[in-house]
Length: 403
Image (cartoon, rainbow, N blue to C red; front, side):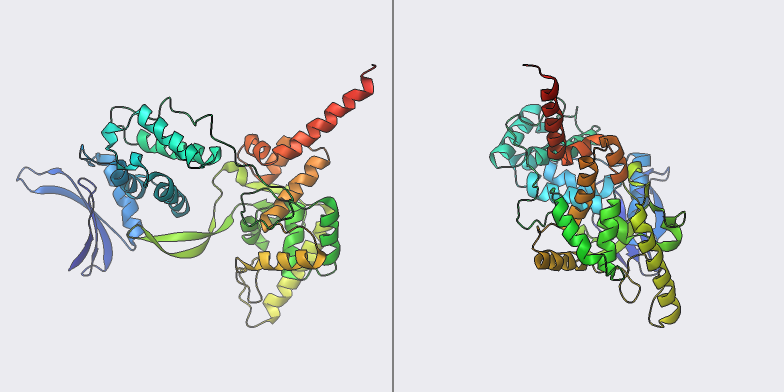
């Protein structure tokens, strides 16, 4: 007996075989001389494993056939789950954009063969009228362009060619220290110098507290929270506590079943770009704190029978990953007690970068320390800081304006 997942023509099939106690995928690649189907079958322990094997087979033999009447809404999920080889986190991002910004619109109901430059321009103009930001529409454009490029064997050409984001689309400005609570990790928020001094003064005498230690470390390195949470003593702390090697990012990864997210798992993920893998020199004041924390970790791992030694630099009392919401709760408590701005954890990273810019550091150096894939990303995030620097430089012209 087998449980089969229905799929489009030429995509093959995925099923679970009770007799073999394995997941299987099968793809017909032709017809034998005796008239019987010529099939290739692959096996795996999980549904995801055989799905990836089937994707490879479909690509290799080019068996997938689309009906001329297939719509964007019908083909996009097939492309996303069966054609495109993506991480689950990226797939969830694509799916969210599709469900919210593509599927409800008329463009989604159209046949692929009927979608033209004109229809896409109408669609983008409607997105502008509906209040979508320039950044959001740029992302949608990129996703659809990739989608159409991968569909060229079913359509005459990529209809996205020549279609740009409307000039009327408005930027979504980032927020800086406006005194309001910010929960969006993507928005710019940072402490002022006085606020940072208040925070550091409050926590410097209690570095053995894992959250104080975490906040000090991010303020001294500019790491993302997930990067800090994935640090291991034996792999990532280098040269007598003078450098940190960033190679992974702890993330809650969605697990799909039948194209739906059924749960999340904590996984240490390799950064998307090579720039994310980097070595960060540590400020001298951070080195003794790191060394002391390492000594305390070794003692706890040796003496506490309930402690699970996972070699994590930042862990809970039992040696496991810190729960994702706890750092923000502790930071928020400190912010309220000290009456300083309510920034989020990512704001500690922004604070680090802001201090570097205020000290006159070059954007290329800051971008490298932050692990940005390009200087353009750094420039976009910190545009207002850079503008302030420009203004200060221009004001110096007054010194030699003899009028």
